[in-house]
Image (cartoon, rainbow, N blue to C red; front, side, top):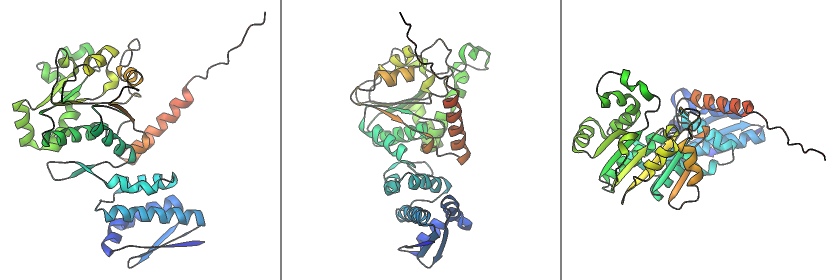
Amino acid sequence: MTERIINAERMEQMIDIFGSFDENVKRIEEAFHVTVTNRGTELKVVGDALDADKGARAMEALLVLAGKGETIDEQKVRYLIELVNAGEDDKVGEIAKDVVCITAKGKPVKAKTLGQQKYIKAIRKNTVTIGVGPAGTGKTYLAVASAVAAFRAKEVNRIILTRPAVEAGERLGFLPGDLQNKVDPYLRPLYDALFEMLGADSYNKYMERGNIEVAPLAYMRGRTLDDSFIILDEAQNTTREQMKMFLTRLGFGSKIIITGDITQIDLPSDKVCGLKDAMKVLETVPDIAICRLTASDVVRHELVQKIVAAYDRFEHHAQPQQKPKTTKRT
């Protein structure tokens, strides 16, 4: 058995990293098959040489986060374990960096994974950013947070959020109310994110003034959008023609973020996915970034990450194998 000793600077850090009923440390003990004990500000990690080394690195990473004032929760511990196993725990400080936005309740919005950190950097650096990844990776939430931050800093004059209502198709006519009432259910996730960032009073005020617009994609046709932060959500449900129409709405002083999950396409089989097409067409165009988030970047319930991974494995094995080509002898 090997023993590793780690020293914390303050007793408060020990309280932060252990969590309620020592739940954070228990996760690390289970993941690396080690035993973690503490006496004052001293931590002792005991296990086989390799396991003890990984366990110690995980505990040191937790101390780094605690030292930066980060709240240690189940998702952060789970992600740290992944980083240690991948040998990337030295990058843990990057996920405790810049605050993207402060919500109406004073909660700081930050990247929780390295993938999210790259996504935020790409948004800040480029005029057009395409964020692709599975459910729960924060694509839309971080995009809205970035939009609100730019609006508060007066970098743009308005925020425009849009989604295609592909799922409804011709069935919109069966829904009650006027057109806005019919499409509101498809725009609800965008409303919710904005409401959290701005609060009820500011949200309603900016909506009335026209500083914030939430509309279906069809409303974008024929417009030129200057000094705007524009987000196209659920872009996997756009056609090639719709995507080209949307991208060409870009005006001076504006930014565009396009988000989507190419594993959840609702388009008819005879339609080309505009998101997949754009990723190929625009890959080498300057000032356009394509960020690919993965199951490791899922920040929802742990089971969501497992569900995404299970579907990825199933779809990989379900793909038909190509038969080797044969040549005819003459």
